[in-house]
Amino acid sequence: MRQPPEPSHGQYIKSHFFSSPGYFRILVFVITDQPFNSSGKIISKEAASYWFKKGLNKIPGEIKKLPFADSYDCNVLIYEFKKPESDDAYLLDPCNITADEHLERAKITTQLNRK
Image 1 (cartoon, helix red, strand yellow):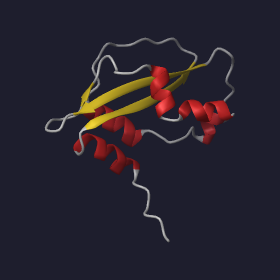
Image 2: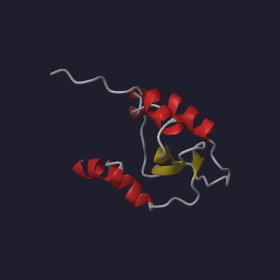
Image 3: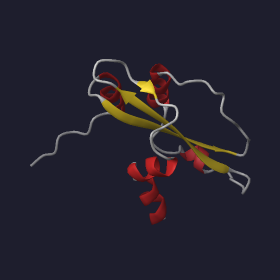
Image 4: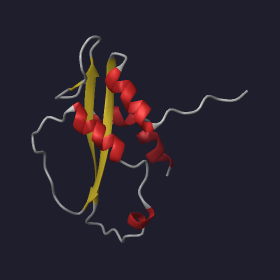
């Protein structure tokens, strides 16, 4: 039996912002040798949608080829949103669960431990 096609990234994020109530998260991976900190700005659903539309599902080949020294760090920025039954999605600040729990529920911890 043929499986139904997987939803596109756009359909996936749209379903979170525009339909069923619930919680969802967007994870942003930052790999850099430069220090940075939080701006304190609240992320809008429009900004998060833009990141999702313009983001990639893996590291591009030309970036993979760059030499990374020990001075590089990988940070995960986690944005948790709530979509009420009859309202727009909004950012939860602070999140309801820890960063470790987000990574476990997204099955990222499992994948990292396999390597």
